[in-house]
Length: 197
Image (cartoon, rainbow, N blue to C red; front, side, top):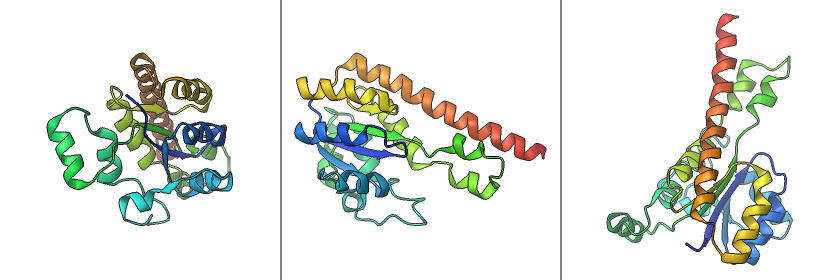
């Protein structure tokens, strides 16, 4: 399945510009959020702002930006399923074939001895894990990348074939669920410690 549309929203921007350049050269349309969009645009890479996709602005200091059917419907649609395909057409939702997301730096934030509870809470990512889990669930059709070290490998596949093979998509989905599980464990451990205090 050819990758035509990607959503990139990363806290750790290591390697993301080079990866996005390959996607752009390969004819992949890129959607992005605030900070990542700014980084890519500054590098001269064409990007569609996620708010232009959803028709809704980022609100509440960025707490709500990607939690929208135009994002999650695009990620979760089962290709070839007539009901899903009909919903995409009727609601004018464009499928999203690749999701590159990594999460707010919660572990790094709470590692600081002076961090406040309020500061820690603001580093609990909501939209990121939702997109990762949606893409990982739909790995039969969607490529999910949570680790920047994977960019080169995936970029090479896209340049060569315009697509990512099924076994690689499943491996990436496995990594993605491990990533969100580890993230939730860190939040759990932190809040447990706060309760003890």
